[in-house]
Length: 81
Ligand code: HEM
Image 1 (cartoon, protein in one colour):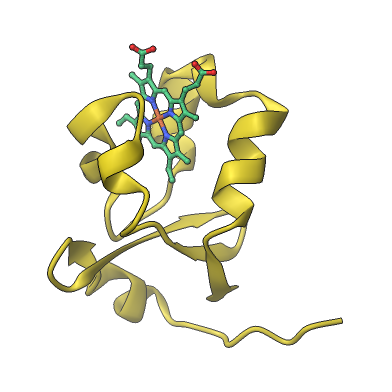
Image 2 (image 1 turned 180 degrees about the horizontal axis):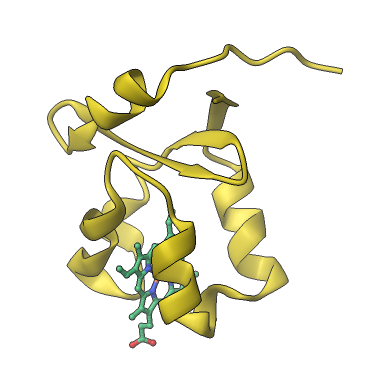
């Protein structure tokens, strides 16, 4: 089992721009999605979640409730909360 670093919410919150990096959390995981932002099929709206949790947005946009979306997200995992 690979041990990923533990990050604080403050560290996640400090990453909410392309310049500083764009981090989000999902179910206790921390994801650096900087490289994905420009590829997002839903455009710039992805930045609404920058520095915070995906859950409130993904419950509004149920298009994310699919295995292939979670596979994309998993590629960007950098740590745990
Ligand atoms: C669509 C991934 C965050 C809004 C999609 C799709 C993917 C995706 C793969 C296409 C799904 C499909 O059609 O099968 C992601 C990932 C995210 C993320 C990996 C975070 C790391 C967000 C956030 C919002 C959002 C935070 C809103 C605030 C949308 C919308 C669509 C969409 C509105 C539909 C676009 C359309 O079909 O016109 N997203 N998303 N996404 N996403 Fe996201």
